[in-house]
Image (cartoon, rainbow, N blue to C red; front, side):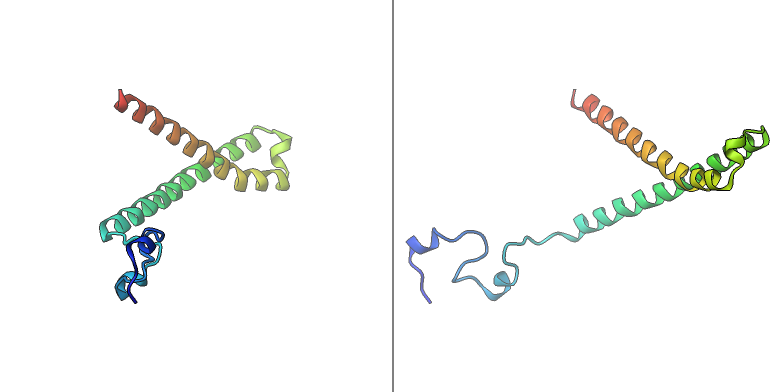
Length: 115
C-alpha cells in the first residue's frame, strides 16, 4: 500500500505503514545493545552482593549489642519479643541508613567532579 508524503508526516516512530516486517515487530521500542544489558545486570548483582554483605555485618553487630546489653542487666533487652524485634529489624534499619549514606557520598562525589 502506497502512502503519500502528507500521510507519512502524521505517523511517528517505527509505526509506519510501509515499514519492514522486522521493524514492525518492535513497535515503540528500541533495541538495547548487549553491553548495556550486561552492565545493568552487573550493577544489580553488585548491589545485591553489597547489601548481603552489609546485612551480614549488621546482623553480627546487632547480635553483639544485644548480648552486651542483656549481660549488662538491661531488663528491656532480656525479653524475647523485644530482642527478636531488634534482631530482625535492626540490621534492615542499619542497611537503609547505610544506603542513604552511600547515596549522599555519591552525590558529593559527583558534585565535586562537576566542579
